[in-house]
Image (cartoon, rainbow, N blue to C red):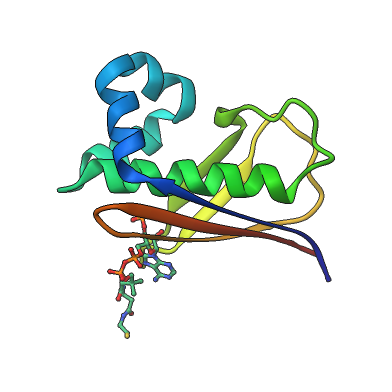
Length: 116
Ligand SMILES: CC(C)(COP(=O)(O)OP(=O)(O)OC[C@H]1O[C@@H](n2cnc3c(N)ncnc32)[C@H](O)[C@@H]1OP(=O)(O)O)[C@@H](O)C(=O)NCCC(=O)NCCS
């Protein structure tokens, strides 16, 4: 049974501007070390950061009952095939979160589904 759904779209340029303006402070506030290592290891890091940002927003929409969910409570990794996985740390979440991410040079989009 699906118990929650969320989506978000992000302009890659907006994330690039935030990184340009706030630098490491922004990255450390929003992303885990693992996420930063993953994104910065790619040819177009801003696309991957934007994808993760969209995914975190999507998860927040899918979990309206989880109070005070911070960016870094939501952590996204990729398995060996590249498929994204999401865990919420520091909160008592009963059900798994499924996410899907896509990005172009300009936009990133993500969906999150909470399913029993
Ligand atoms: C998954 C795949 C189709 C993505 O295609 P794309 O159009 O180049 O990229 P998109 O921008 O739409 O999506 C990128 C995101 O897809 C997700 N993704 C990557 N591999 C994935 C997979 N195996 N399953 C689900 N999602 C995947 C990731 O979240 C990635 O973003 P991230 O690296 O920032 O986390 C491509 O990476 C691929 O073909 N991977 C190999 C899978 C495979 O076996 N293909 C051959 C059979 S057709």
